[in-house]
Amino acid sequence: MTTTQAPDTLHRILDYSSRSDPYPLYAELRRTPVARQENGSYVVSTYRELAELLHDPHVSSDVRNLAHPMPSMEADTTPAFIHMDPPEHDRLRRMAMRHFGPPHTPGLVDGLEPVLTATVGELVDDMSGKEQIDVVDDLAYPFPVTVICRLLGVPREDEPKFRLWVNDLINSIDYNPATDPKEKLEKGVAARQDLREFLGGLVAQRHGHPGDDLLSKLANDDGPDGRMTDEEIISTANLLLIAGHETTVNLIANGMLTLLRHPRVLQRLRGEPELVVPLVEELLRYEPPVHIIPWRAAYSDVAVGDTVIPKGSQIMLMLASGSRDPQRFVEPDRFDPDRRDNQHLGFGSGIHLCFGGPLARREAQIALGEMVRRLDGPTLVTDPPPYRRSPVLRGPIHLQVRQNGGPLR
Image (cartoon, rainbow, N blue to C red; front, side):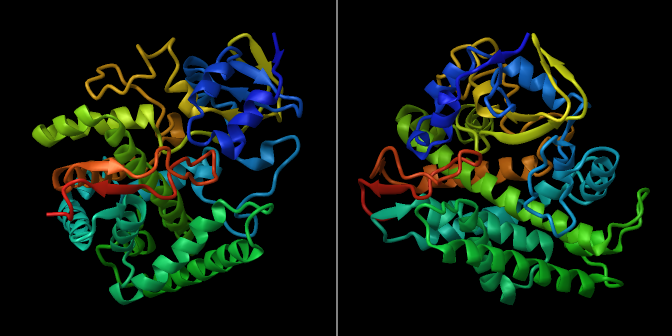
């Protein structure tokens, strides 16, 4: 059975006016778990059906498998493995994971702990003397860039221009031709090209000179799957940079916003620092950084629930809706850091589960823990805060916080 849903609900979710609170609209979507849209695409919004599709080998991440292909963001370059299917996806992901996490490098995140703690400490120190801070500009935005520079092996003297490119590139993701100057898009395109050339230069320097950074390891490693090409290394680095950076920014900003809206939990975290671990897991369910996977393609006819999705159809996966599904979670609209059964979809699932998830989790845990410890009587200046335009990677563009007790101690 195929159900066609009026497009109004989806259009309202995608409209910027709903960015501050899309959750009531997700509840409307869930009345039709798998809904055909007027353009022939399908929107999936309930946990069970989302989980099925995220693990279904007949669902593709390659735009070329759409009946009406859309241009890739990286059409003129080697795509990142997030836009590939097995076996190529599996090969490149294995090669990246050999140097990024378990099982081959299980101590990576733990080994970064001193860098993460010191970086957050320096950023919080820089806020000293300010009665009002911007959590995004002052901490959530610069923190992951600094960490990624260290991971990739970007020389310290190059970090300022690297950050400028990242800033222009990330800003261009939210480009709106109706309201934004064309310069915003042009700067993003130029930054993408400059960044690829810069990373390419670093990779070329690493050949034959192995070091501890990720680019060195990828450029010199001959593991069971061979070695990545330079273009594959650059695309993997870009994936870590763009997806990892924006996800972590939103996780930290959404987390601080949620804590300020739940002052009892904030106060409890001050007295129970270990609470930050389950708290971040609940944030990934309750206010996730990634709301939508905007497309997947059906390799063949795909049966999900009572619906058959025809081969070549575009499928939109509403992850944030699934993580608030009352058929899966008890009181899903309640923020509960003590929640036990919490298999959320905050980082996706299946073969495309976010490979930077362990690092993003730890970055958020350290950032939120230190902010809560050192802010004095924080209150929101504006609620809701202004949001980025994207409905896919959803988070505040600014988060102004005032301290009742004056400057940071």
